[in-house]
Image 1 (cartoon, rainbow, N blue to C red):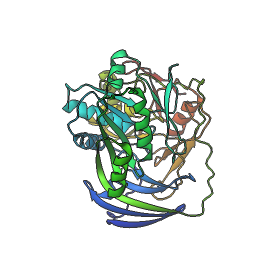
Image 2 (image 1 turned 90 degrees about the vertical axis):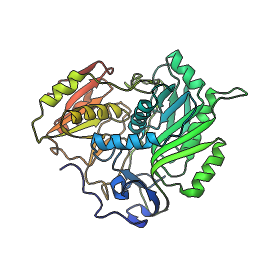
Image 3 (image 1 turned 90 degrees about the horizontal axis):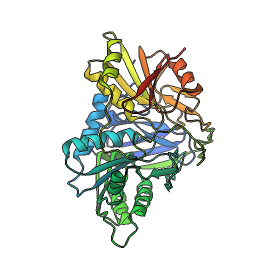
Amino acid sequence: MNGPSPLPAPFPADVEVELPTGTLELRVTGSEFPPDSLLGFAARDNAKRGFLFLSKVLGKHWPVTPQRMAEIHERLAAGVPDLPGPVVFISMAETGIGLGQGMFEAWQRAHPDQPALFLHTTRYRVGDEALIEFEEAHSHAPRQFLHWPADPAQRALFTGMRSLVLVDDEASTGNTFVNLLNACRQVQPGAKPTLGHLHLAVITNFMGEQGVAALAERCALPMTLGACLHGSYRFTPGAMESAAAPAQRFDADAERGASDRFGRRGRTTPLRLPPALVSGLAADIADGQTVLVLGTGEFMHAAYALGAGLARDGVEVLVQSTTRSPIRRWGAVAHALAFADNYGEGIPNFLYNVAPGQYDHVFICHETPPNAALFELAALLKARLFHFKSEASIEEIPVC
């Protein structure tokens, strides 16, 4: 079993969904793929927003082949117009991180001579330098942070950016994009900032034509938008009591084990894993066996890179990630597992649409040092743990 069953048929241009948390009315005005191949619907345990457009191509709440993920990365990268450089790509934590990094690498392959930088936002502090903070108001964990690049050359790209590409899995109001844009403007405080164009890249855009036009006006900057699906929505909340625990306990002085090597402090090159790691794992997998490569929280792109490498070696592999997002078992969520947080905030973490014993092999990719939470998760899934200290130094952690 490679994940929950899809919706029974492609849903029409207009659809109304009765969720346990309210009523979702959706209109699809255009899509490059059958809409039901891109998303399903889920009920969030969040009083701020009781629904979720659950992506089937993101590799977060639904297991996805790395080939399908790469197709989405390439499609969104191809939708970026010709932009003056330096171009800075920023993807949104936690859900959009892997999507943004994959899209950046796809764009970079097509523009090898263009100066560009990738960053992702985070909910953790890395290092001692000042953070740029902004808000994702509808989120269960609303505080978001952006780190300055550590490398002087990358910092120069950041402060000298002429084009900004913001990446997330979906757009519904655009408020978070505005907040992040305003945060980025802090790095060019002079009288003549160089930032001259904003491009938004999402898998699904539910802002509607009027919403996109209003967002462009709010941004006060030439703006383009690329998406695989366009439409609009309306959600009418029902009676809801959320039993979800707090999903963010930020402590500026706490060391969470979050790495500065994979995108929080900037990257200008693609993530490349040691070939021996991929070939060694592939050699242990028999024909016909199924494999899940699992990222942890914000650490998503390494799981995709490992999964893509295994797929090139002929392995049947799916990619997914754990999350801090509380979602009810309903609709597009067939299974829900809860376990401790390996970053040590003391908040519940979850894995959706994966049942223990479903896969012959599970490889967990993590950036934090091994801890009790990771051993608990490995025991639950009968998985192997791989600690990514850097892209060149990856240690398998023995699991008893």
